[in-house]
View 1 (spheres, rainbow, N blue to C red):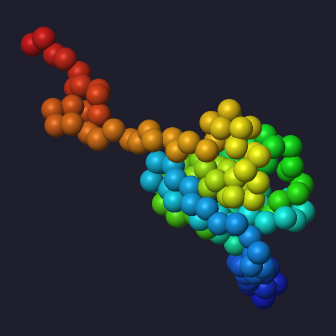
View 2 (view 1 turned 90 degrees about the horizontal axis):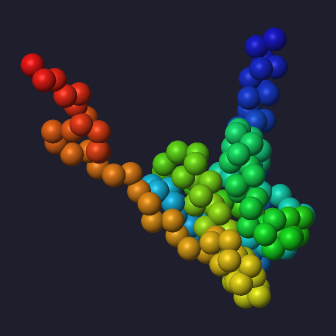
Length: 148
């Protein structure tokens, strides 16, 4: 019984080897996350850190966000995407993948620029976590006031 579990775990952990030699490369950033993205003509598969996108991002909201650039240009089944993401959490990583994917799609066809720019996918979201200040509980939240 334990041997079967070990074999199943090994199959899941094996990284998928993909051929992305004739692809376009771009880098995307969001919060603390950096995504290296390769896009090429294909069948619409998206791989993140060697795993299928559905297995990497468990929340449906993140899965929808990652596929947004392909849906905007109405070609969700025409491009294969391979991403290596590091840093930050899942939300920041999904945003970094969007940014990188849209930049790579612009290299494939510059006609997508008008559509992607209109939905603000080519611009880096520069918002970051504000630092905590001394004398405060968080960045802006003060300690509870006590009159006496």
